[in-house]
Length: 487
Image 1 (tube, rainbow, N blue to C red):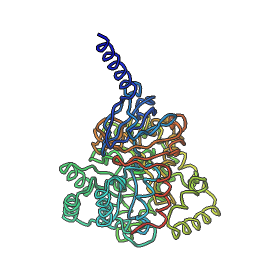
Image 2 (cartoon, helix red, strand yellow):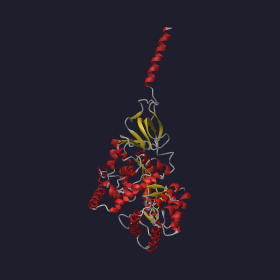
Image 3 (cartoon, rainbow, N blue to C red):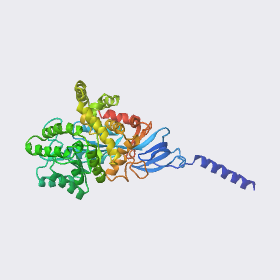
């Protein structure tokens, strides 16, 4: 009897000991415990444990419901905030080819885990997409459009430093068909239509894209108005480009004037002709802005779900002057030294030139229009156009989020434009854009709450890319490496 009692006591002690020490073990996993998860629609979900196994999110659960064994690789998330990896939905690897080798590291260092390249020579851009596919844990996901599909004359023809050869000029129906087929065969993720296309070319591109399951983004051609382009199949608009021309009380007259100029000066250089038309019409259109006309245009964009990528950091850069901010000044210490010196010279020139009244007016128009677009329930994606306009890859996305908030979005709504929305645009909503079980483990761990202040998206403690964890020290190393990248 005594032996039985001793045996029972021993079992009880072992049971108590095992209960105290047991906890779930996740082999070769990253366990972020007691963290506040940011859902881009629902807001903050506190005290969560997020388990990353391999390249995916294995589990998201209340920390009270899951006890972890100390054998796990546990990261204390107390006082920290976990959000989905960020997108920059408008970048150009090919705008400055010597900058491209630094861009992967700059993006990751600033929490950008996916990018959408919206125009460049197909061989060059595809090289970077292929590099990203070959090493997905150390590079942002790359979605590419290939070259700008432009008419004749084309704008980005390589004729000037600010017009590198990003486009192809399409002079016939046959050339248009062949180019779209070729780009599709090379695996582009979308097509980019540009400003010198004829309406017939634009409609053909949109029709072929729909047949091939591709989105069409771009600038509204100068030969069309926004409503016609959206109805023809424009899935998204970059920079709200030429939207002001369709929101003016004299929009019909402006269109007829553009058509006359496009025909009369068809033998001019594309970049020069486009600039001439913009100089003639943009200021007039903004001065003649008509609220009823704008509401009519936005209703069509909402009906057709024509997404907007406003690139406010670009359109307001002369008035917002991001290049005077401490964040920007730090960011250029990570870029190649020759580019840093060129950018500093550009800043010195800009600081000597006063901002024109129209530039002030256009910046205000842009901010107000983004607010109207958002209120019209038209989808918005955050994009920057980096490295154009001295916009540092990676850092500029945080500037864009701040500008979106300045236009009237809440911080949470701004975060959605760089997480859930791009994923939805590419039909990847079941793979990306949320901190959710089964999603790719693209994550950003923050030291401060970005829902309270959008500037806190910059308080990056760690980044996870396809399941690989980069702590703050490793991110600093990555950013410094961008200064002298491997080619």
